[in-house]
Length: 622
Ligand SMILES: Cc1cc2nc3c(=O)[nH]c(=O)nc-3n(C[C@H](O)[C@H](O)[C@H](O)COP(=O)(O)OP(=O)(O)OC[C@H]3O[C@@H](n4cnc5c(N)ncnc54)[C@H](O)[C@@H]3O)c2cc1C
Ligand SMILES: *[C@@H]1O[C@H](CO)[C@@H](O)[C@H](O)[C@H]1NC(C)=O
Ligand SMILES: *[C@@H]1O[C@H](CO)[C@@H](O)[C@H](O)[C@H]1NC(C)=O
Ligand SMILES: *[C@@H]1O[C@H](CO)[C@@H](O)[C@H](O)[C@H]1NC(C)=O
Ligand SMILES: *[C@@H]1O[C@H](CO)[C@@H](O)[C@H](O)[C@H]1NC(C)=O
Ligand SMILES: *[C@@H]1O[C@H](CO)[C@@H](O)[C@H](O)[C@H]1NC(C)=O
Image (cartoon, rainbow, N blue to C red; front, side, top):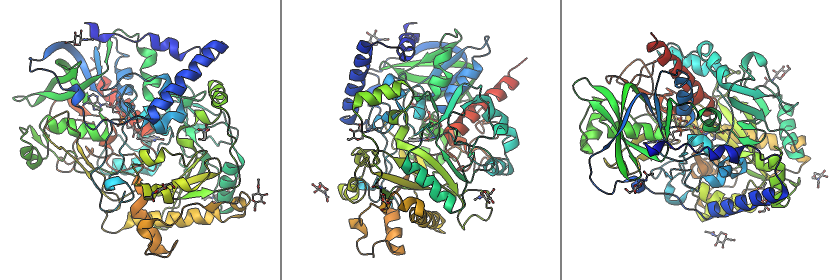
């Protein structure tokens, strides 16, 4: 079948860049300049109708496999790699998007890649309490499409979360998920390089030999040093944020290899494309899980490729790894979800489960931009490219994100357990694309991101790590080509704990910027009063609570929409990630997190992939 073409050519694009001739270098720079221009002028999809078949012909048979994995993102890539280690198992990996490219490889493209085909194109439902400074009160809801999934477009931070997070998962009735259980799985994937002498690494918690390359951003600058120095003044220390001593600060641990993005397909799939038992089908949108209604058992999937519907069958299991937005959508389209909602959408019920009812997110405040008198060197484009090819410079850094810090506010009694993260962005932190990547209203943009000189500024974004607010994923219609409805519902918790926590962290950040260390770089709040909050005295408590409603948005870390747990009334999968009441069907991705973590989801998703692969190898070995 001609669909399995593996783009061997991609290897030639990826290797050998380091030693290229002047002519090849110019070609590369020109290619990148064009890609960047096109991306900056790009626009996003509003639905998936480009996949809709052109006629109603019956589905074509795509064959039978042992396992079918739906979605090649952070989790699915790992599962495909580990399962295909068993030569006798035939694995089908289906992915809606295409391959990573030289454009996605270059970390500085992360922000603009969210305006391209590598992003599904979602916007949230209009919000009541957050994203009020965004157009139509809709938050941008970036999700990656392509092998690598959201790790093609993400900020590249490697951050696992705190041991207590996993111990809480276990204590909720999920045996096998305590920190003691998951630490070996984190270590199994990790390939950490301690390339920055300033970074603190406690090797008890790390591995240097796994396929997922992690390194620190290699350099510092006077402004970043001042930011760290300010934290020392307030008695916080440089630390290994991926060890139990998480509170403190670090240069960004980055999922890059010599400065090049290591999305999870580059780490786990591209190196194994030669395995003959792994079938990777890109540009394939799975529209339905085929379920045997007598057995209530998953038999396979239907997918649309080249505007034709195919059917593939699984002898052993179907694994849904489509991410926290698309996994609940696909389950509901297949009859697995809340009874009343499916009835309303005219979908025949297979199993009544709380799919999509608990979307959890990290809430982040994006309104704190500061000016300084440090000037980031601005270089010609080609010089940045040359630096990038040598593994250094700002083009190796996604989102301008250079440092992360974990704190705990008065709302978290255990001083070792962080409840707030503060993320430091610099270097073109006020770039013009912010207006689109955050879907901002012009007046919001004018009062914040546009006020500063791009080379003389930074942004400090506080994140509520244990946000209490709960949102949902629902279907708009019963068509797989319509986007689902996404409601993160930030800052909606009854106790106002989320907004109170973010307010505390704003005060902490302002305190940091008032230290001598930050005075030495002349740090000043750069934001002007938001027009929407002009009834409040600028910088008063009421002002900040108003501003929090305007500029609290996603951290882009949706989880929990098909949570694991012991009770099928509140959970969708059990601790072995089996969907309740449907045989031969598992979910493995960010949607199974029962709660948010004091970390970023990529590393935990990779861990979940390792975990499921071990469970399946155990269940099906003979
Ligand atoms: C802007 C941004 C910045 C971020 N920064 C960081 C960061 O710095 N560090 C970090 O750890 N995390 C970060 N994240 C989050 C992180 O990347 C995700 O949480 C993680 O990738 C989720 O993994 P997943 O396996 O659940 O889903 P994904 O990685 O999203 O993978 C799901 C895959 O399934 C495919 N798919 C979906 N539906 C279908 C279908 N019906 N048929 C076929 N294929 C389908 C998708 O195309 C996708 O490839 C960021 C995210 C964003 C958007
Ligand atoms: C920082 O380190 C010092 C000395 O080891 C220690 O006393 C202090 O508690 C640490 N601070 C934090 C916030 O962990
Ligand atoms: C896609 O479909 C068209 C029209 O049905 C067909 O001509 C073409 O060969 C198909 N391409 C692939 C790669 O299957
Ligand atoms: C920062 O912005 C300036 C001005 O737009 C641009 O010339 C430069 O290439 C940008 N630098 C980086 C690292 O993106
Ligand atoms: C935002 O600023 C631009 C440039 O100064 C100006 O043209 C525009 O009118 C402003 N928009 C709003 C809504 O204030
Ligand atoms: C920045 O401002 C501080 C405080 O005003 C001053 O001491 C320092 O010399 C300034 N640095 C530069 C590069 O202008």
